[in-house]
Image 1 (cartoon, rainbow, N blue to C red):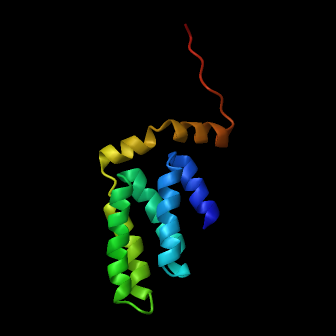
Image 2 (cartoon, one colour):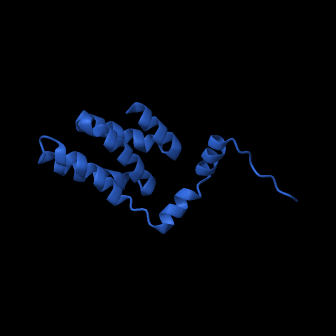
Amino acid sequence: MEQLKADRAHALGLAWAISRLVGRAEEEFPESLQRTLGEALGRLIDYQDARYARGYLARVRAVLAADPDLRVTEIFARRLAVWMTYEDAIRVADLKTRRSRFERIRRDHGATKVRSCT
């Protein structure tokens, strides 16, 4: 969980917000949900902001209160995160044109930056 939290926070440049919310989730929710919640919180903060992610935790908390064996809560937490971060055409374009994506592709494939022909 710590490595996931650190990687996600670093990638988004939002270490303080993710660390704080994931820390709260680690204290409040069972260990079996923490990986799902950690990933979801990173996505939700990137999608909108920390307030939006807190709303997600409130919804998961409500389901958890009525689900002692956690089967429904795990499915709910995963699917709700996906629903709350719907990726329409504009969102997909934003993700695909991020500088970090191009840098990762260059690094993974050993490519160098293209130089101007002027």
